[in-house]
Length: 229
Image (cartoon, rainbow, N blue to C red; front, side, top):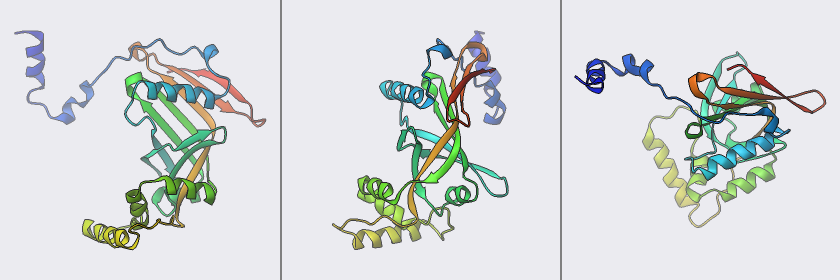
């Protein structure tokens, strides 16, 4: 019996719960040299993001947003990065959603990007504030008509009786705003996370990964350190 046949035989009668520990991939890369990285982590992030785009990573702007309630209970979800500069990282959502409520209670949050094909991860921690209404208006106008309708129809995170209730509301709004601009809901708009810590992670062989962390001091100057994997 070949090695492959023997391996298949071992796994044949096992459930996915038993097999999950066997999923393993080796990360092979050139690693990170902190002396070759940008002094400003936002500039370094731009380089990494450009690399993800050039390598045609599917939706490179996908990021995990972590928030914490006033009771200290964390929650996470996937959102989309819609802009970044020296001020921070911008995303949009319903202000009355769970994440919106939690950001109002506790404006500390964290973002995580994972570009697995490149064995790269970026972790960002900071404080969150709403962007201006003018900026939110401009982005809302740029969205497809259907996405605008959905933003108005959905009372995000609230309980509904079923899918039909949501679809009925969408049809009503489509009729109301047929060939008309959809106004941005007052409870929908953008947030900007202003970072005070950004960590760049590069996967390497034998799980001996590279981790370079930038921290912002009280004088708004970034320092850079290497962390043990």
